Length: 294
Image (cartoon, rainbow, N blue to C red):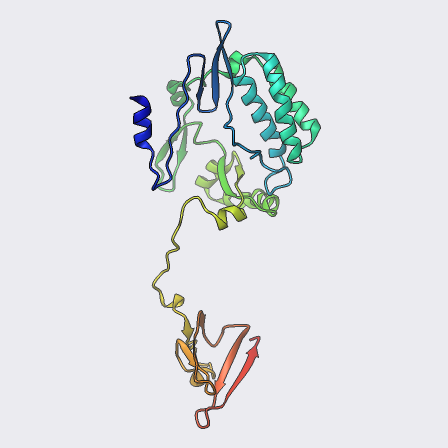
């Protein structure tokens, strides 16, 4: 019955295929492989047979501190899922080779490996302790707003404000400018109390060619219906403009020699720079093309 149920879920039209894996001795659950060996439960990291080396390249566009943070997290993941030190060391060699193929330094990999090896596995599999709500109430502070009212803020609210932006080559310069000119906002009493702990500038994932060429979700670009988005040639509307009198407002132009009609694909007016203007004589209909920088 179970196999028939899984088969009924498969949909060839939508290219959906569900798989199953169960056994009396072994079972895979998410990224964890659980097996029974000599009456003991053994755990390991489970990877699909067709999985490739998807680790982030060391020379890709991302903050440099991730070159140490990513290996540390991966080795901790192995240490937590392998219940024996011997199997952790064996799998760590494979993980090390995968990192080396991506350009990571051997010294940082060795440091991350030893750091995870020294930790107790029992501490890694423990859940995070919940924060006592009573302590948050006791650690509250008072902040006065513009109207003189007293607003209660917990210590969590008085922590550093996080500014998140996409990572780029100019990320460090942007971070330096924000920290340099932050005291300007201290002139406002409310901003001063909020920003005195400082700010924390963090980077999000930088856009990649893969995200542009093959996005995971299709996003239809919405176009506003304002007149600025309408393609064609228009007058600038300035009273001092001498060109507006000779401008023919139109979305198309016609070649007087071939009689072919062409569509203007962008918004252009008298002030548009670096465009090619078409001058047409209204008597003989001869045309002349001229490029203007201004």
